[in-house]
Image 1 (tube, one colour):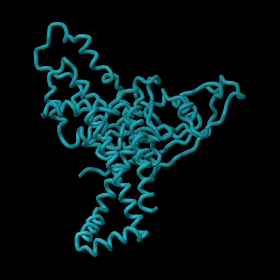
Image 2 (cartoon, rainbow over the protein chains, first blue to last red):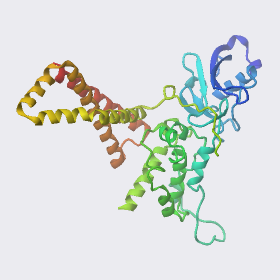
Image 3 (cartoon, rainbow over the protein chains, first blue to last red):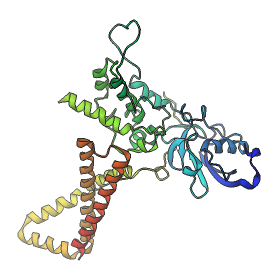
Length: 246
Length: 129
């Protein structure tokens, strides 16, 4: 990429990146890598990582689709979680410095790669699939446009983990509090007209930790790369539980 | 036996951005802890004020003249105000669904924090002037 851009249009950028190699490092550290980025084009953070990897070949990070669909490259960009592939440098860089760290609260496997096991354990607990009790219909389980509309703002989650790893309640209780992503998915199936396990789903959430550890900090909403609102979803589940228990 | 996980975890809250709603929520917790830690001071003062008329008058005099006690009362007062204000904000959000969007929640948090600053300044003037 850099070879196609005339040198005079390049400007230096300091990339400060979190490094940890389990084979040689006892502790994680921050490494500054000076790179040159085009002055006349707004690159994405992921492009910068690729440029940095040309200099530091051992630098490790996850990526796949590079267009905000797969959710692989979630990381902490200058203090705020986001997807490297959809975060432009113009939004992220402060004082000519880009600071990249792994998503908070999860064990680091290497550099910017975290172990997402805890995140997916919590996701699994909400049974993220349709549960039906009737026999399967001949063709399909139908849904009216109005019923389908209820899923908007819920089904778009790509499970990048940005929200849950930005949530202080998830940091302190990652094994008990389900986290914003899992709870968003939970509501997605609670409101689905085709699902027949609403009461069981609500029963599973009706304890001190699974749902009620959310304190409305709204960092999940602030960082969601898809513009979703897990805090509102959590509030809606709360209201359903309250109305049910009246 | 479960093997100890030696992998590092990045969790430095000083380098992680939080929206104003998050900072308010964090300070709400801190103010709750401070109130819990200092409630004995209030109980001590209540006890003094109820012991006798002389003791009550002496306590009032101390509150007016003892600078350290004034600072302590000021700090406890603003902690109570902060905890109450943000607590009311949370109740309003829970009961009426106000401020469930990031923008509206942030605006409401700013309003409550500005109210807190104004009340703190009024309290400061009331106690020290």
